[in-house]
Image 1 (cartoon, rainbow, N blue to C red):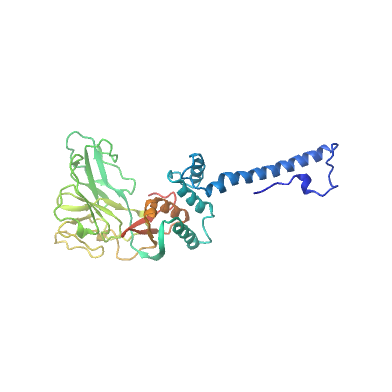
Image 2: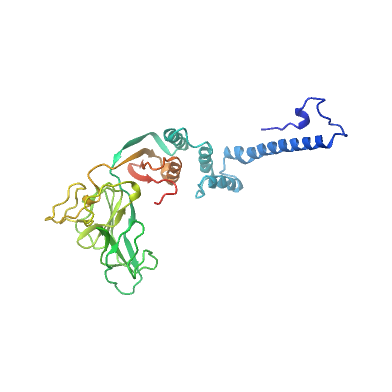
Length: 359
């Protein structure tokens, strides 16, 4: 604890007149100095009362008032969404208030990982893999909605502009109070809309590892989430239009330059095929009739990425959103980073975006 010394206590005897007839100028100097040291002393006490003691206290049985201060501190570091266990917030603030960022990204990552081990979020060891990948993220779902009381006609093609395409006349991109919807797929520079379907009809959802996992005889309107469709995309979405599984998610150009072959090729894979190579086009005479995602990515690797490989505990899985936010704080600008985390035998991949980037 800082204890101040007065002006008189810091000066040798005889240098200043501290008697009752002290000069006005001397009085002002003494008063100013004593006020400054008093403020320093009070600041130290406030630090001790509102930070050091609180940060080492068990909050399980105390009133919520100390928590308000911890919430305030968390908000200052961009974690205003945290409103749970105070001991967890205390541990998180211990890391945040420590200067984040070593001399480089590697040392910053080490500091973060060591903290996560101490918090009980991750299980050592961990790894960082740097390499070249043809990785493409999908940022848009091509779907439109209608509030029509009767089945609307199939919309005409819509020109596609990334993150700026507009819904056809009579349709909207907002799902509120919708009675019908229509999914679209890319063909050349257009969005081709499929037959509208009532929102009251049942939809079957499939989550599969690859295109071969999509059922061969699904119901019209079924949706499939494909973890790896061999294009490098992560969890692309497919819609069954009655004859064809069509991809209704689009690539995000922010992910880097992606090689493109023929831009006029429609984005569809016929269900009987199940699998189409991303490099070799399917035969034009076969069931796929030349449709496939080989046109979305070129055969050459395109960008450099970093993959952070960790194994998380149950607690770490609970706070995976916090781990993502912490990685955003130290992520190098531009460099694509993937968090690959394993929990209870299941591995998930999440792209760590730059702060303030368009998702």
